[in-house]
Image (cartoon, rainbow over all chains, first blue to last red; front, side, top):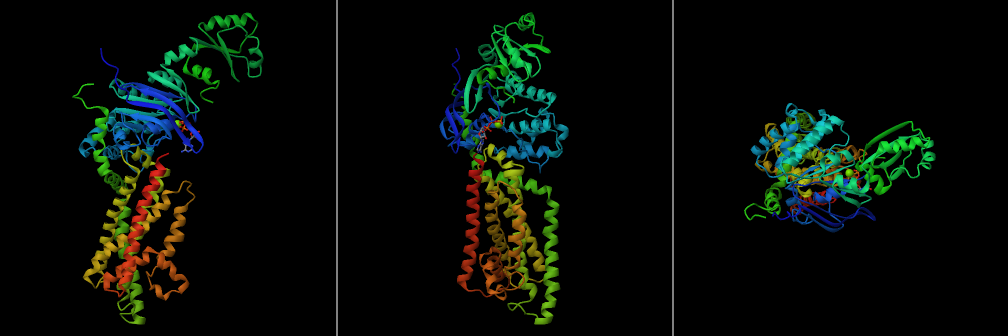
Length: 311
Length: 279
Ligand SMILES: Nc1ncnc2c1ncn2[C@@H]1O[C@H](COP(=O)(O)OP(=O)(O)OP(=O)(O)O)[C@@H](O)[C@H]1O
Ligand SMILES: [Mg+2]
């Protein structure tokens, strides 16, 4: 039997403080080689801060961290030579053309210029940007810039790819193209670590994830396991109009496994949403709209924190 | 784990050997590619400026001076010979006032490419090194061309004048790295760089003995010259260009002052970059 491979990232009680404020407040996790690992959490949860520490550009305040068995405090350049980093906001060089952005970046890894050029052309194809090779960066759309940033992160064939909100701000089509590219990398065995506040993204891309809030880990597991543990199979969403939701909620006693009242709607957690809807109408309550859907990580988050993931 | 495939850590250790050694040069290479996008401006100013300045200041203004005061009017040489080494230093300072300000502000703030470099195996200090290297190259080209024009205009009587290329470069670097130190700290951009050009660079150029000897200024303005790297550089380059008489101790002061500013500015900028990029 194969032994369990050693993790490529190990964080133990990782803390990052800015003055007195703990942006990351003692989080621990491991990432196995080839795994696709996600940090899911709302704004300000500490996702980017964690990513910067893992990316060996931000010194931790306390705790232990090892990336590829090396301590980022001592071996920053060594670790970074094996990483691909997609930061939350693009920092492509707007003064250079698309292909040159890849070339200068490849040189930072000490790669010979010939190899960098060949690799740049491969990556332009991978990112579907061949016909933009000579364009200015500012002339690219948001989705193209993001693809170029991902291509840039791959110039050194990284073992670990760190993606900080890779698809935020993109339209659905652009997101799907990106997801497809990330899938392919995953198939090739690249370890992915990504942050997101889109639950569908986490469900699509992550083998395993941690839900982070206020710098701490609230839960950990595969998307399916988290949903199983913290939510029901289905969710019934009913709306009675914003004034009446709260009032109606009082009359839903005994309906579903659990009920969440949000300002604009009521969520009824149950394994059979349609059946709950029938029971609600039997009580003489007639929602303006109703919808039955599968449980998602959004529901997990709501359950764990009592707050919505996207405000 | 098999013994024959390298572990991740081993890959990492070998992967950082070249970046640790040559990282600064990779940054310089990046800067050259960027400069290529404004190569025209670099070329036009590099060739146009010496011609224009030497012609108008040296030849035009110079003939006026010698008409009134004789051919060896200033410091025992012609006005052109007096002003040319100063213009050379001033050209160097103009280059560094540009290269150590906007690209630095851009890289930390407006188009934060420094963070991208740092996410690759490049250390913050190497980013600063790379900028310095690239500016040295541009300075060498600019000052070299300037010097050729000076010779062409008959503005350098002494063969030692070639050394004034190095003096001018050092002058530019002394001023520029100090400015970079300041610019690297700018978090809120409220136009400080434009202010710097107007309230530091311009007065410095006017009161550094460029167009007339510092001694002919009122005493209460002479301190500007004493703190100005441009004055020290200009005085020193005149020593080489036409053998201006300068006490030995003052020559030592010029060299030490310029060298110290350059080294302190460089190292200090490295520290600021390291602090700033490590969020
Ligand atoms: N350099 C810094 N100085 C001070 N506070 C900081 C700094 N960087 C981050 N913070 C704070 O740390 C907390 C976590 O920030 P972080 O960027 O890690 O959140 P995030 O989970 O990535 O959020 P988002 O989804 O908005 O990107 C925030 O409250 C933020 O204001
Ligand atoms: Mg973030």
